[in-house]
Length: 147
Image (tube, rainbow, N blue to C red; front, top):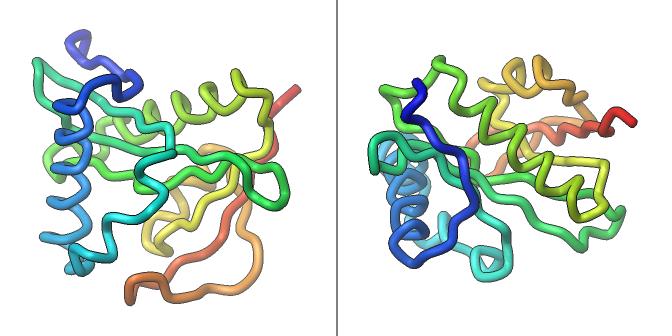
């Protein structure tokens, strides 16, 4: 997988690729309404993508300015054929490193319950009760960076 590149979104074309992955995963597969998938945070979030041989195959974003000063990671999506190949973990680490470079060392995310073990394997701990977001059961998870 030496052709895999994890990077920040820098162009409109790359953002379109990221949104394409999100729409394939969340809207087509998970039936999230398209109007719920796009939100006001897309304009200000820092987006990352995984690119394989010129094609965007995964994405995620990180946002700052939360009430508890944690970076909020979200919209993690990997195209179906690329799941379980470590791509999601690479995007997650990249977003954490990006947050750390901004001086933020606490990360939070709303994990879909069926993938909470993925996040737990990356050091995230469940917080609070399960809740519905876009009619999908989620749990808040949190991680403190190692110092």
